[in-house]
Length: 151
Image 1 (cartoon, rainbow, N blue to C red):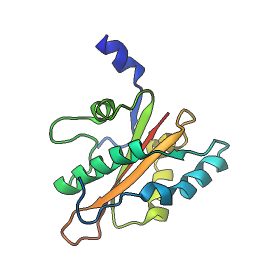
Image 2: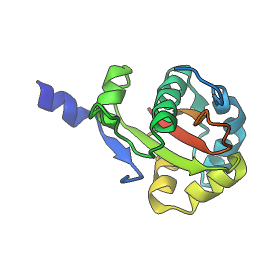
Image 3: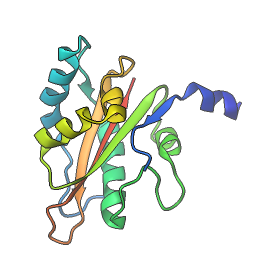
């Protein structure tokens, strides 16, 4: 049964690699236009901002900011698939992550220039997304970004 459930959950991670100061909750609302332009330019429907996916993105961005590590797994060995199961996300899903001082324009340009990240954003199976970032809380302008896409 577990293997059937795991097989049904197709997960793509482009990179192989709580609330605190510098929280980027609400970033999804600002990203709607960026993703709409990317998707419609390629003949795909727009993605809808989803609060459940934004919370998943915010948790991962927070983990990365707290540990100063950009990766899809957490210190407890929870990979993207496990996190999505815990968040109740079923079906195809993907995650793009990034780290740096970039704003949203540069972030999406960078992801579009990366084959794996681009593939995730242009995947026709996805209909919703959540985007969030966190700063490390040390007064730095460095942001840890997470974008979660799903059906």
